Length: 299
Image (cartoon, rainbow, N blue to C red; front, side, top):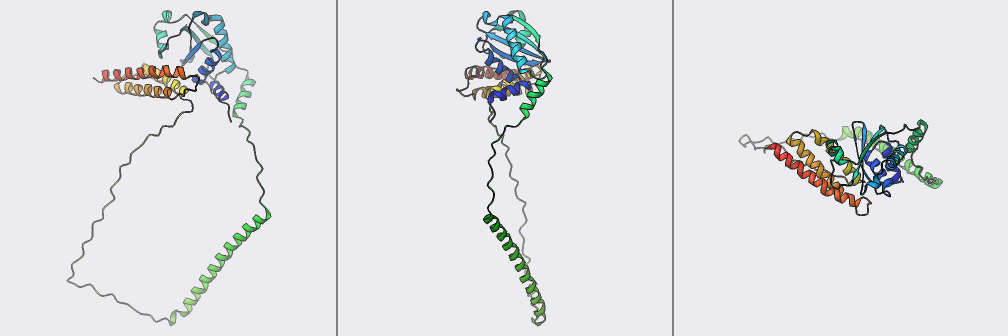
């Protein structure tokens, strides 16, 4: 059985932003720092939030994040832009806010470049991930000689029965061919139909009425609704930059609502339950805003 933390680390090494965020939040939880991230234009935009500026001391936090990311060594991610600010709830489009007014939004920002991983270390990790888990193999019991003998007898019976049936069929056919000249040949006549009898009407053949089939959409529960909701919210946020038509805004509204539903599916036993409850309302409000924008463009 695969350890969930090993699976998250494997996804992070493959470049999953949601997995990277989860690992960073686990590592920085003791320092009271929470992270968000979006991969855009070849740069991992990382937002660090805390309750006080002391928790976001630049040199310490940058060095800590560099160590964590280089230990993960995510694929295709080398440039990381670290942004910091005092924590703000229910603000999903934080990257747009930072682009719009970085001076009032951030305490500081610093871009770093991650060191390339050792080639042999990367190959070792890839082989470890691809190596299948060992399964306990139980010795299969060898069939006993009695069972083998019974199977042989069974098949012999089937073959013998088929041969006997074929022999009886051939004997019967030969006997019929020998006795056929002795059997009187009779001709039976069927009475002709009366000429005055009216033709019988035949019922028209009706083709079966096609039955309309209804299509149903089956929704499979996700093994990690929190990560799926974050991933969907990031994609929807990026798609919202280019939305022009009413149909596109309606599609964004549906995706925001889906992300809210996924966050609502996070169980109370999950350590991210509190964050998930905050984002349920945030995503729902984004859906309402998108619906209003769709109505405005339709009018």
